[in-house]
Amino acid sequence: SENALNPGGHHVSETQEGNIQIQVTSIDRLRADIDLGRLDYIKMDVEGAELNALKGALQTIQALRPRLCVATEHTADLFANALAVIQQIQEIEGGYDYVCTESHGYQSPSQGRVLTPYSVRFEPARLN
Image (tube, rainbow, N blue to C red; front, side, top):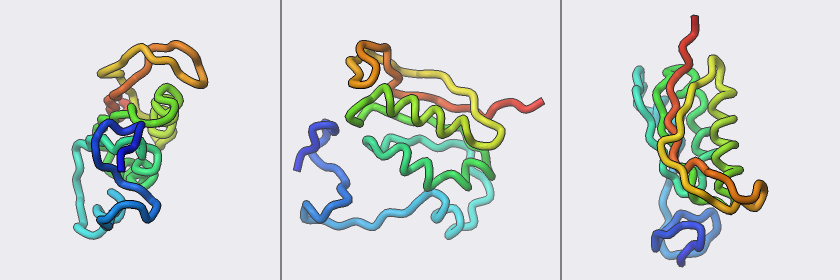
């Protein structure tokens, strides 16, 4: 079925709708399974599941401090989601600096008309 917030014709759903079931995992579990000692970059474009995906990558991000790029444009309130993603990543020990790499004007349900990040790049903060 088509998701109005996702312009693609297919999407992953936590309900039993649809005719294909797929197994998913977290970045943290994958890292443990393959004993990954280094990770330089994570690109996330997970169609509105950013906060859940980041929770599943928390230990990896804390331990390996990769650069990240997160697309934030597929939720009911794009602006609120972008802010939540930024806050979640900045709360990681040592923090991250960020720059918006793509933004658009948007009518946010929570904030009204705002310039809204659609893609945000994060770099581990330089600690002195």
